Length: 363
Length: 75
Image (tube, rainbow over all chains, first blue to last red; front, side, top):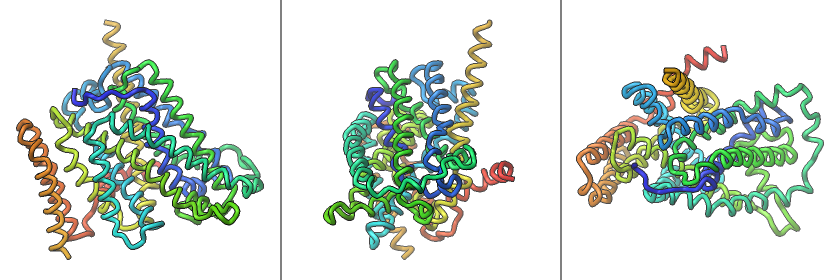
């Protein structure tokens, strides 16, 4: 066993929640709004891939206890093709982590630190995450546990003062053209929901496995609830303007002004967001490093943390020249790659594995 | 500019190697090989990127593989 740490099922749920919500709050509203218009607050309810990936990951883990997705693919498909599938999934994790770092860097540079070069912002984040990842899965889980209360309190702190200014007429007519617009608006969200497959890499370290299914369900519900609340607030405040901004929820935070005294709460939003995205980066970074070590059959993953961090940093610079190209890439081919790596491949693996189990059971 | 970038990349990779040296010394041959391979590949790609930023990056690689799929689905 490469990792000696143990986490609880609750910690796993917290890690997943923080690994999905922060960037979803930031980027999804403006993309989702283009498809679903005033129904886009309903879109998070269509969490198809979240349920599918959690189901597949839990079932695969029941069939092959203690093995993660990469090891299962080697066991099911044989050594060579298993390694190939493993490479596809690992590259996706590497790319995804670089993508999150880039989104973080672009957000911080674009909205707050205008004079700072992008590489400094993302390099510092990778360095801090690398130190956390070197500590192992327990440290990452503890960070999640530590930051979750702050994340939730700050989140409410942004939503609550804004309630008197919300304009309910912006959400009318609800479902004017049936449920189809909201479903097409949830298309882009499936990318975030598919990240739930990460539980496959965390399940082997969970000490109380019986509670795992329950806490995963809880994590899905929490993510859906947070996204519905943030989308609804954005919609009721900004209305038709939602897709005019890159980061609508940041505009919501800027809008707050209580008694002319509490103003410019976007720094609060920034604080939330950095805490959340730090856990997100750590989780994906950890999975990349652990997966690479297993893929190369190394006895320990700690030595390759920094070289992979270097790779992630410069991939994040290399992936797109600017923010618009980045959004275009997320909306087009990266979506297909991520859904293939995180949904289609695990589902096919699950089908093959269960057929094999059945056949050998009949014999 | 290019010289500074290449110098920066070299310094970063040298610092990483120096920091990991005590751990690497104790670890097996396989880990040393893996560390060297990932560092060297990362360094070469970073230098190439510094020399010519217009080289097709990871997004273009994914694009090349998955664009046919996208065209197939969205018609």
